[in-house]
Image (cartoon, rainbow, N blue to C red; front, side, top):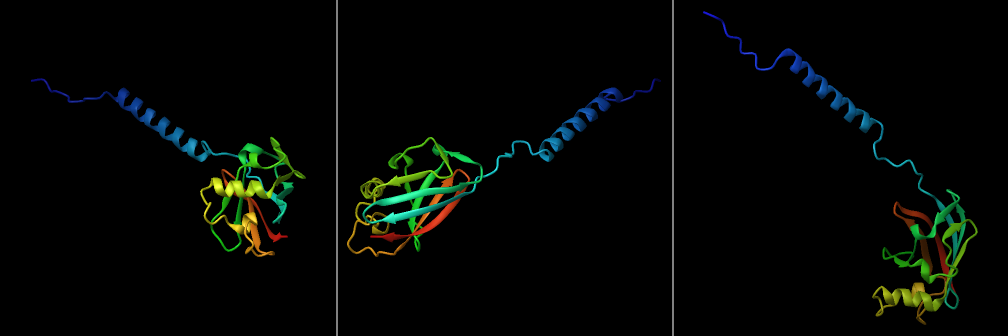
Length: 165
């Protein structure tokens, strides 16, 4: 009688499969350890000053930018009352001038009428936050306003100013 051997996989095929699995695992470990897809671009830090006036509107001056400059299309200007969590975004096309690049020393100005238009466009026509627009005789001169600069990574610069006459 002859003896049967039930070897379903030859030793060569087994070694090849183990080699493929090892190579795939090594590639996965290398990809994650090497930071596959991570960004090495630094988040900019912006320093700024702001001046808010009932008669003149809002003036924002960039006094420093850690990356040297910013693409104006990549940032947003947000304003809020100091004790509020509700921020209003002011589109950059409402400011004058409208630079494509923002550098240290760049000043953006939006007049009082422009501020009122922004708040109305956001659907807040009933209350028109007077702390931003100075639109009410009841707003308090000296009330504090927060001005923030943000990009896709979040807030990159902030300052506080007082509403003046």
